[in-house]
Length: 238
Image (cartoon, rainbow, N blue to C red; front, side, top):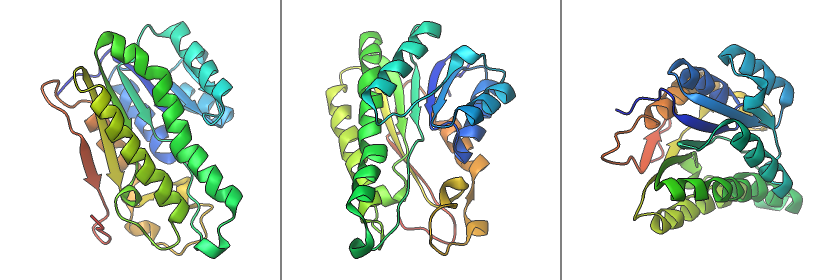
């Protein structure tokens, strides 16, 4: 396993339940972390918990080109390179097709597909220059197995998987590794605004999901974990 000590890591979606737990694990392992998310107040709370300076956080809308540019500039002011890029940002809108508003469909694609594209596109050149790096995205199981009412969500996540597989082909002559994590249901604030009956007590705990990503960050340099699946016992879709 690779040590995380002094690794330069960018964590997007740090203000979610998984992101917050992961930030603690990464800084506890000696990583040099930069966090971003949409909620500045929460980012500051996490930074305090992890003993990060104010220079190591930025609230940004990754669906906005100017937000991505600002993030890149802020990151490059404090860190010379990026060893690991982790994207946990995303939204979930579960509606039957006839009830799914066009605006919600497009918003889902913007946050779950376009934003990861912009983020990856912004930081991939520095990895290409170094000819090494690790990019982790979390399509979730709905990026492999569809579900009724998840037309927008699955479209965005299937697209994310295809996009990253294509990018993998672009960088296969380097040591840039790309990992997709297919998570099943996680008991996190993600479900707070979703009008769907779920058994959150039977879901994966946020800290356990975070630990799986922490593990992926330490994958051996001689190989790559291209995919990993983590699901609740009671709902194994893959």
